Image 1 (tube, rainbow, N blue to C red):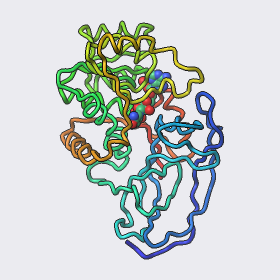
Image 2: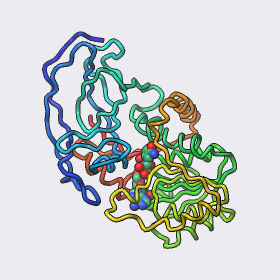
Image 3: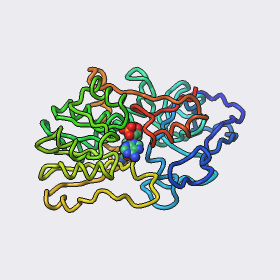
Image 4: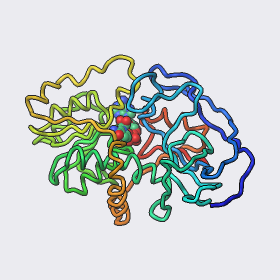
Length: 341
Ligand SMILES: NC(=O)c1ccc[n+]([C@@H]2O[C@H](COP(=O)([O-])OP(=O)(O)OC[C@H]3O[C@@H](n4cnc5c(N)ncnc54)[C@H](OP(=O)(O)O)[C@@H]3O)[C@@H](O)[C@H]2O)c1
């Protein structure tokens, strides 16, 4: 803790300018500069070094109900970020600490420390706490362990397999002795999944009009678990190829986030009954009490070189909106981040 105080801090932030209709465009975002008054006793001033862009933010750009409150027009966006404490008048934080917070999309933020976690830069580069050691890694871990209750020897199908969540799902399932089939939409992603991540088979879903047929070729006896990041045709194909008593882990449905009409697929939901399939959605936030278990397990996998990851990095706040929009074009391999140095 320091008692030093500074003058007001100028901070650039990205605000929601308008609500998108369909795929977001950069015109839905606006840059503004605000002044933060100097911190008081019990507060910290944090300079963001990294911020996360995530598909769920698209839901927050809509008006109305989602599982997180909507962003307001004219207000800054929010999201996971890693910042450096540049000033502290709080006895639990020191100048120079790296902290995980939820006030991304801006240069600086002030906090009383509630919900702010100091991260250990010796374990992994600090931005890893937005990816493999953070929300997306934990989503993979919760989905497989708590929702699917994954058993070794299972056959697992993962959509958006080269993304932040999907790539960790693939590796946790492989570490448990499962056969893993992934799907992705670009040749370089397919190559990375095969050569570096080492999963058993990968489907380029953009190069087939028979996803169920392709999946069945790689899983002739059927799949036990589908980890759904995409929804629609992927979900339909997974149900088609699922074994009796299999499980669909509903993590996300990115293929539907920008649609203006209800999705046509899945058209085979009756098979949930015929095959006695369990389908369960989840939100990682509900499992935060397990965060320490997750960090411990992931940290030991990282130390043992049993988990790898990729990052796609956009440079500067000015490119944050493009980085976010790119998620829906498949521009990212692994975790999409924005560096704010
Ligand atoms: N339930 C939870 O608590 C929770 C938490 C975090 C994330 N999620 C969900 O998990 C999913 C993955 O999130 P992430 O952060 O790991 O993102 P990500 O997979 O790193 O990035 C998104 C990827 O989705 C694929 N994609 C985009 N549009 C698509 C479409 N129309 N059809 C098929 N694939 C499409 C793209 O890869 P391709 O090139 O392969 O198309 C893109 O790179 C999302 O649905 C997200 O909402 C849920």
